[in-house]
Length: 120
Image (tube, rainbow, N blue to C red; front, side, top):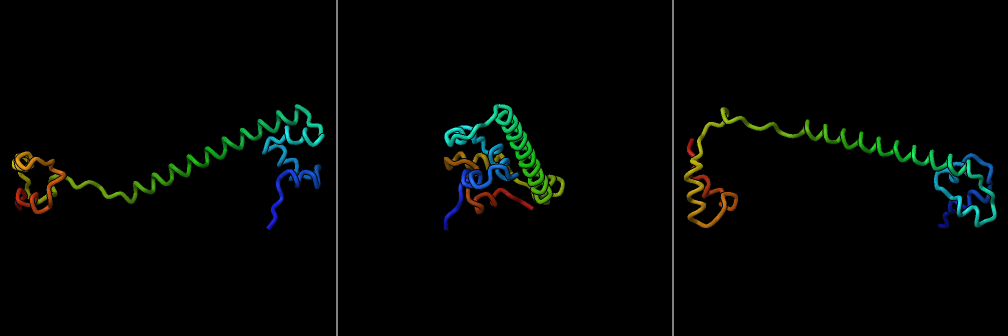
């Protein structure tokens, strides 16, 4: 299916509101001058200012979306379990000594090896 480029829309009806929007938003001054159209500097400057405003608005909406997603993720994040609620105890010194004797880090030990140092 053939799709029109923005320049095709501008050629068809240069005075339409949509054409003016395309000229301002896409900064097409060089393209229009190549086609022999006269673009006043004031229009070009206004288009650049509006383009920057659109960029800033999009950036603000994106940041708001990111903040909203972050806050939603905080609501779904489980809270830490305080030590006072943990029923058993862990012999951390013994676990560390065992890991060193095996030549491993604690995180590399299996759950079975770690359970040897946990008492209820």
